[in-house]
Length: 149
Image 1 (cartoon, rainbow, N blue to C red):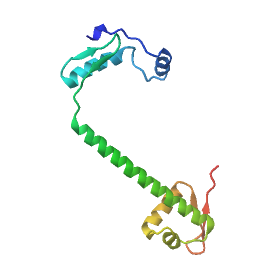
Image 2 (image 1 turned 60 degrees about the vertical axis):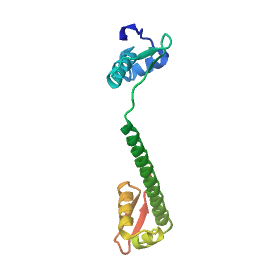
Image 3 (image 1 turned 90 degrees about the vertical axis):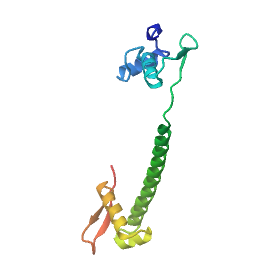
Image 4 (image 1 turned 180 degrees about the vertical axis):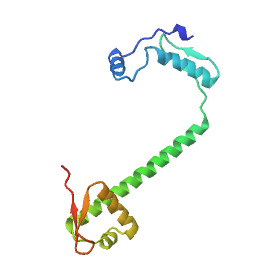
């Protein structure tokens, strides 16, 4: 069956772009690979040709794949919510510092409704990102917003 396929790209311009980018294999390997792997995974070489270049191959799905996809989607949603919440907290901290450079960490924590430890951790992250810095001592010093060039 694999020898019956005549390789040609459906869109030669697109094929050329992918080849130049190094993202394309040799011409015609896609159909051969579909045939080879459908035979491996379905344990059958039951590929039906519908037209000259259109075919159907039925491969049984592993049900655990759906569970993995559901877990991945849940993890992604959780990560996005966490990132969004963290970004909002960081923005609140920067706005508080911008409006009052003399503000203390306990005052920041109270203003954003967080305890000291998570507030300090967010401030450390903001310093590491180069967004804020502390000038002077804890008592008598002030916060400085770093302007990005």
